[in-house]
Length: 406
Image 1 (cartoon, one colour):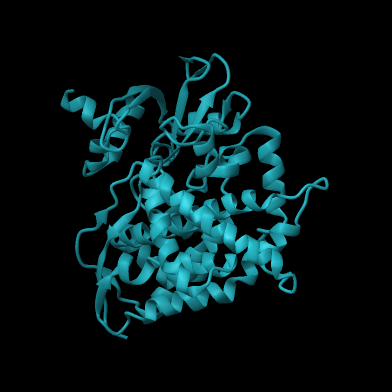
Image 2: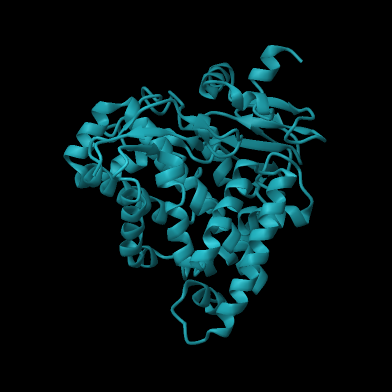
């Protein structure tokens, strides 16, 4: 295997050890819209795989995302092929298509509403302040490990009714499930999360007096007279926990790093926070792209940008590449809170699988940076970030920062 194969194949762990994978994606975008990648055995997937098509340009990612009839999610959204049971465990409704997906999403939409998120506003702010204040007097810390790491987790756990004593383990499991996405280790973590959630759901069913709790409302929500089963709710719990904890922490951590690389944008945001916040948050999510990809499977022989795709072929949508597509985003590598409002793909490529938790994520990111700038206005990155070694989540394991003690 030559160096080019190693550095241009995102199926391999070596690809994600590159200093800047975006260089490889930029090269691929310039060459053609769709690339074939083999899946040789690796440390992540010892058995290898049958290969997949990588879609790297914005317009093609959007087109495939919105055509669930031709490019389905029901065979899994991970690169690696899985058994039907594993597909269900890893994604629940994320790995559904058509009527089944629409039915589950409609039930959840009855409960996870903008009003639900707005009602969480005080809780979100309380946890943001607590996470910042616990290290404010130090004058420096690890932004990820000491400040941000459990912030989204505390919010999600409040929403889902997770006891305080159980939260540290849940955070640990969600990190494993996403950073090692698709591996046996991640599958075991998902199984443990679901088993835990089934216990919570059972207790919520017994606590009829707590009818306003999120899990109780999910238990009673219905569409066309049908409810989600306790197991389906537990699988959704695992999906919401993994997506809502790790990806939001990634957006805030990498967002802080982005602000350190673009100090002019940071100064302007701090100088007019409320007015710029909506655009700033969207641009941070575009620049970071916390979820790097999702996969689809072709339901029939078709084509993408002139490239023939056979029925059953795996098609991987690289949001990380599409959000830096120079055909859509001028100076795409720059953080720019004043760029035209093109629709970024940080919450997916549109269509039926647009991120259910986008409203909550936006709220958490906004509140955290508002509290951070108010409490530690001169906070700055003081060393090199340590990225997570993952092909799925664009996370940071560590980010050193310093500030005037408060």
